[in-house]
Length: 240
Image (cartoon, rainbow, N blue to C red; front, side, top):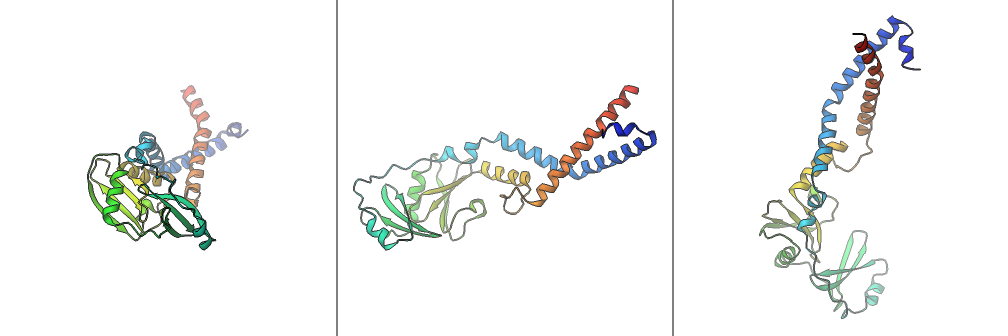
């Protein structure tokens, strides 16, 4: 019905066609850069192996601790009734982890003693043991604030950088030395193009924000105007 209405009057149809052609043209110019960003970022993300993006090829699991000698956590749980108990480990030593909101308390599962934060030497050793590659440690840093690339982690934590071709950074928990996250050059590229794809230039997490919705709706409207003009173009070509 919409397309047939174009042929009711030659003057009316030409005016309408001229209007929709201008709309389509200007929408194309407005959307050009973002369309390149969408398609280009989608291509890059599809080309990057997700295992390498996550750094899974660089991870090595620690040996499972021996829990047969662990004492009961009941006395500790009674002292911390509002905390959640988790089983963890420091190297091969079993550890009881009690959590409440952002508070984390660590106790040896062998002695019930409070575990102190790891020393730099201990962190270095645990980082190497959880690293699958052969490169040496380039530098390491104790961080009171999580950097942007691991913004979801809770500080303080340790950052250990390896001198490998992946430009990898390991982030370890300060008490247990648990590997929390791996960041590589591929991950940083992926994170950047993901930002372009969802148009969240601040936190790179929100894909329900108004800017993306407006551009997506505009892109849909651009496609519909193109479809609207297609029959007229075909008819004009057939007349020629």
